[in-house]
Image (tube, rainbow, N blue to C red):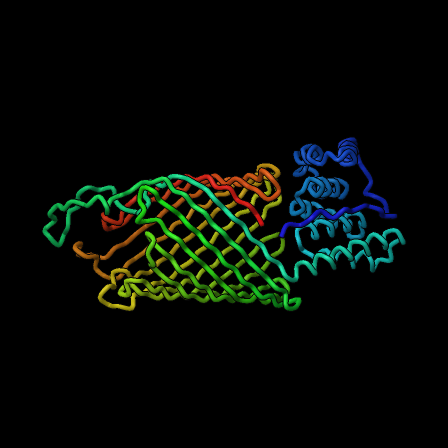
Length: 436
């Protein structure tokens, strides 16, 4: 659900922070003239030098807020209040910023702090108006439904994740060369894709929230239709919040079709712990248990994954957000005769985003996964070991309030001990997303 702007009027008897120089006076004039973007451009180059000056931080935060970037404004307002905790205008504006990003509890706390300081009557009236807005927002947030629809097209250089070798030597046949059939070799294709994702939450109490989500992903390869697929996901659970801690438990279901035929079902349980650190950082740990059931029942297996993650928003130009995660796990086939599909896996993922401009964000992710298979790979007399490296670059360009263009590039290299599973892959795509 998108937040609607709440009209706010700064009527504080305590007065605005004193302006110290012409730059701040110019910024105030730009804000008065509704030129917030120009005010940000004026003040941003000076932020590193002047951060910690309450008058500067107040106007820096207000400029970001009026320019539609409330998350970034919070950093500046927090600096202002760290030096001047009784700065009434700054406290009202940080409450406004918290409200704009949906942090109603933080907004209420700031407004109650002002109310407890026995402000003048006009300030009390303003605070009451904002508390009313907080109440209204909290009622809307009690039950929240969000969703998005995406459509796109692109090109996949290796739709079947296969080798490009035409012949391969088989150790079990004295390294004699055998032809690799065209169907088993690398196949490229244009791709058409669509996706729907939706989520629902119901705050049953201040600390307990019921969660549900569903998704549908369809990818069609007109030139390699055997590898076209459809994935349907659904999940339900609950989140328990205790201060900065959150505990999440969910049941996860998935069904997949490949080439138009049933292929695999997944039933899983997810347990996750999150802890919000100061300064916009977050730690997380999770355990995921899954049962994989295939149409070819000999491949049925159970999968366990344990992982941890960290993310951090940085207070600097372009509002960078960085993240990293590590995970490990195993997948075990139920049928010992196909133990070659059983594996231990370990991986890491790192990346981040940069807000290049209002409505434009650059995203990147680099991932590495090592897989060690347990059984002997047929005809090769040894087990399979993979090292897969993947890089994704994408851009989110908001062209309308609810519409974004999403160009992306993904490059993957899988270095395998088995020539048939050694491959490279490149995908480029352009999608359009509509936020419901």
